Length: 189
Image (cartoon, rainbow, N blue to C red; front, side):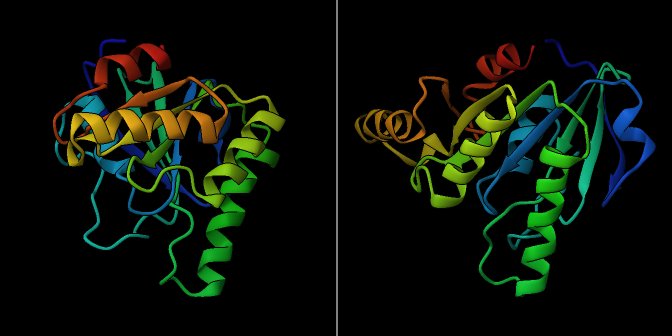
């Protein structure tokens, strides 16, 4: 996939016409602070298309970005598992994610589950993987922030993540160094 244009369309918190307008959707999901926004920005080769928050938990909507004049939408889902959010805000984010992936009748073309390579597969990630498999969603796992580890540590963590996730479909990624961009774009295509 060659990305020639990218623009923010809208944020939604429930049923909206954009969900069903026929444009394929690629959903990006992961724990707060794994670098979802940075991954999307690196894919579209723009530094500030998706706002990167100084504090985790900034995204509270399903944010739609038009890629290549509505050839596809990149959908940035809120991060889950952020401890400093209040219980009601955490619950509403979890409900929004569940609604989108389970009940909205939207079948994303692909779901990109982003992990922090150092943290590996958390309990929240395990639940997400189980839900994606159960619902029959196509998905790929991205182990982000590989630039924070040396080669030996990276190799060990990637092996552990593949084992924990139960799949070989894990892309080593660095939004900072733009490593893994081509592999992820190929998986999305």
